[in-house]
Length: 415
Image 1: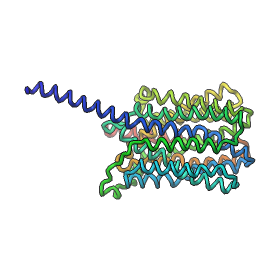
Image 2: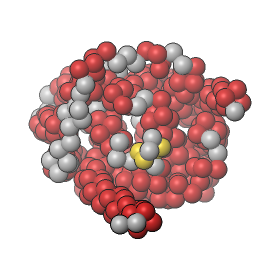
Image 3: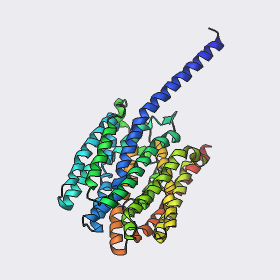
Image 4: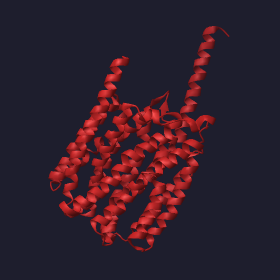
């Protein structure tokens, strides 16, 4: 075989191997898409309508804010604990299966009327397991959507949009159901959707990452000492803190303004539709700016969205504009954060990086925002939550600028 023929043969063989790897990777990613769809289908009805169910039970806004904040409280310890365990063992899929089954058993407790203390305990156990599922899933999927050390935004977006579709279906269906039939079937919806999550995790490929003997010596602190990482986490903290007004109080706020449950569902659905549009096309837009520049854009959009929600929620057209900004305030922000995490926390730090993001960007903001929002709304009305969110959005913008400036300076030095 001559040299030129050999080169052609090797090139064709390499192309066939690459194609085979691509097909295999796609087959492995399909179950992750199913998990994303089922998990966010659960979130799509649970998070928007949990406050309304608790209100229907006669609880005060302060009690509702405490119970809703249990989810954020579990994010202070559960994700990092599960992330550490999954990094140490490499058994992310088995841990996901256990978490789903335990959450399903806990969810059945919502059928029993044991008062506020019982609800607190049920939610605590359930959220301790569900709050860690997405970080572990993202970590397990990370190596499948990273090509040559580069985060593949197109592939990630095509998987994540299934989660948005799941959210869209249940937020609309649940709104219409609860409008017609009342809130008493809320526990049934919870059990049914977590059952779907449980089924999905058993179809995940049983991947186990090799755990080297020195895995326990991989220290996360050197990464956390980097200024770029510190600015990133600070920006994420204030950005999600601003979003808590949507996550926890938005349905109650719209209900107080006279919107029907069907309309509340439609307004949530609009935000998810623009989110899906972003996830489907994000590979076209993300390269136009640096990741840290996108952080600034997202925070600026959050300032505008919270301002509209605080001042003009009674005007449906303006409220629709505010909800459409969800494409930037959530979808873009989420992808940018996952890409930055993939950049800063690789290899054996991947699980802990995802978990730290959940703790810092969702645990602390969710707990503080939920409780502080409950106090604010009790004394000054629900609208005060959104005016406070304008202030935290500005802080997020300031921190995002710090992240961009640090990255720009480092690029200038290295360039």
